Image 1 (cartoon, rainbow, N blue to C red):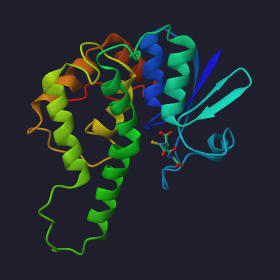
Image 2 (spheres, rainbow, N blue to C red):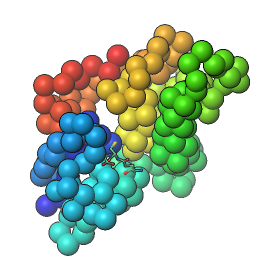
Image 3 (cartoon, rainbow, N blue to C red):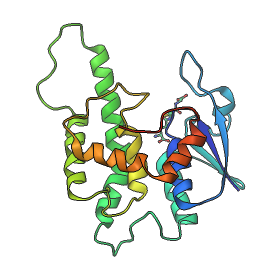
Length: 211
Ligand SMILES: N[C@@H](CCC(=O)N[C@@H](CS)C(=O)NCC(=O)O)C(=O)O
C-alpha cells in the first residue's frame, strides 16, 4: 500500500488531497516540524536523502518531490483521471500549470519574501510588479476563463497550484481582494468533500476554509 509521509503544514498536503480525490487507498504517517527551526525532524530526513516533504513509499519505492509524486500516482493509479492526455484541447494548459507551480511560482514567492526581508527599513518598494505578482495576475486571468487550471474539471494542475496560492499559514497572509477569480477557485476547492477529508486527516483541528 502507498504510504504518504506527511510533514505538518507542508506541501505533502497535496498528496493526501490527490489520493482522496482519486480514491487511492493510502496509509498516512504524520511528522511534526521542529517548533523553533520549522525543519523536518531527523526521522523524516532519514526516509529520503532530499529530506523534504512530501515523500511517499510504495512497496520498495521511496519517492520525493511533489511533482514527481503527483505524476507517479496519476500514471500508476489514476486510470486517466485528473490529467489531460495529449489529444485533449487543454493538454498544454495542464502541463503549463502543473510545472509552473513549483518551477516558477513557489521560487518567485520565496525570493520576494527574501527580498522583502533583506530590504532596509523604510527603503522604497520597487514599482515594477514582482514575479509573484505577475504570477497572480496570470492565475487571475486563467481562472476567469475556466473554473479550473486545465478547464472544466479539477486536475492535478489544481492540486499542485493550491499550496503557493493559499493565503497560507506558511506565507504571509496576502490580500486577495483584487483576485475574485482566485477567491472563487479557493472557495470551490474548500467545498470539495475530498479536500475536506484530506485536510481533516492531514491537519486535524486546522480550519478547512481557504477564504
Ligand atoms: N520542491 C520540493 C520542495 C519541498 C519542500 O521544500 N518541502 C518543505 C515543506 S513545504 C520542507 O520539507 N521543509 C522542511 C525542511 O526543509 O526541513 C517539493 O515540492 O517536493
